[in-house]
Length: 352
Image (cartoon, rainbow, N blue to C red; front, side):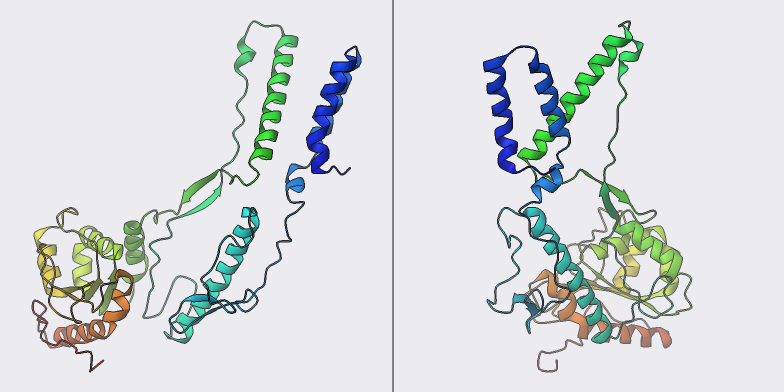
């Protein structure tokens, strides 16, 4: 049975007029017939009636998008950034389009990591020299299951027939309310709940988990960390929880615009002393790369990343970071400490 939207709107009015004009014994039958009719309508299918098919391209070119020389996603024809509301009043379709494009971009980023950065994508456990942590993925979202609350009227002194009649009316009322709520707000998102990943429910937990299960058990003698932004806070927490192990295995740590705070995180004196000798924080600054930047915290030296943009601090400071790692490794081999308090090996832009 098919039913158009206009029929859905007009039918209740027609029944109401008939009831007013006729009244009589047929009223209950007509009301029952209307309820039966509404219960057979597939609301989801009705609201998808004018929605385009959820059939999307499987390439960037198919979406008519490409990355320019600056790494920005732009429309091939217009040059405009990505537009979420590609079709007005079709939020569900726009969301599905966005997700489909996101899957393509994810694969593209993986290809860049493998092709340009010489990384290899493998399933954990990893047996290679580079481990890329993923501290931001701490949970998955799933639809919250519907909880059916049983009626408490079973303990009542009401006759069974009356209780059954009340329960039936209550269910019909709820069904009718849900029906019209979906009709008024068809794009309402499903109620979701977060399921946290076991032992990885926060960036700090993730860092400790990767350390315990992979880094600590590896044969590597020289371990280096590059920790950006909140990653610096996660590393300090790792030191607090695994101080002796970290000191014995980690050679040097490069922080990039780290948001850690040794006071708020209650890092002990021995940790702060170790950080002063073995860590360096490249912070966002308009000063040239490696220019010393004063700090109010007694933890590690701070130098300019050569950019005042937070998100670019890692990329801009990579040449200095790898030089820092090389010096730290050589110093460890010769049983010498690298001089980190004042970096005298500033790399000039011309040398880069």
